[in-house]
Every structure is written in C-alpha cells, then in structure tokens.
Amino acid sequence: MDKISNLKEEIINTLDSNKALEIISIDLEGKSSIADHMIIASGTSSRHIQALSEQVFKKFINSGIKNCKIEGKESSDWKLVDGVDLIVHIFNPEKRKFYELEKMWSELIPKEKIVI
Image (cartoon, rainbow, N blue to C red; front, side, top):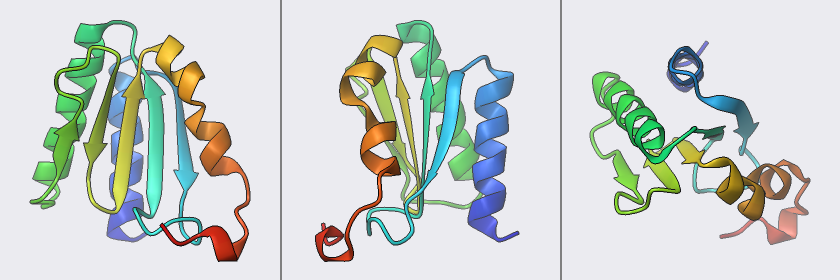
C-alpha cells in the first residue's frame, strides 16, 4: 500500500473509533485534480464535528503533511480537513443530506468535464 492509502485507512479507523457515522471513501482519481481521495463522515453534534476534525488534522500533521488545514472553523454544521491528496468532509446529518457529496462524486464524469 502506498502512503496515501495507508493514511486513508488510518483516518477511517480514527473516525470510526471516535463514533463518526456513515463513513465513506470516494476515489477521485480520474474525476478531479483537487485530490486523489475523499472521505465523508457525519458527527452527532457541533462539538463532535469539531473534535473529529481536530483528530483528522493531527493525523495529517503526524504523517508529515505540512500544508494541511481545516476549513469551516466558524461553522457548527461542517468541517473540511484538507490533507492535499486526501480531503475529509465532516457534516451534521442534515447538511450532509443537503449537499449530497456522495452522489455528486460517486457518479461517473465524462473525461471532457473533468477539468476544474
């Protein structure tokens, strides 16, 4: 396994062991240039979402990813932890249902529409 695959599994295990809900992983290779993988999970409260995002951020830092960041620091509904090649979205269930990222990124995208 390569470094990103190992980190992806470590992030999924961290989210799972800290009671994140409905954790899914989406392979973005060939679909987008923003990242290679995306993980989406739900938290049960604003504090839970914040704690999960901080734990994911620490995993990125500990794995040597220097330019990672957390987006949505002011929001209680969602956080995005940008680990460059791996992006982690953490939502409350209502926001997650509203944005439907799983549906958007899981569909096949024609190659001529891939450029972002």
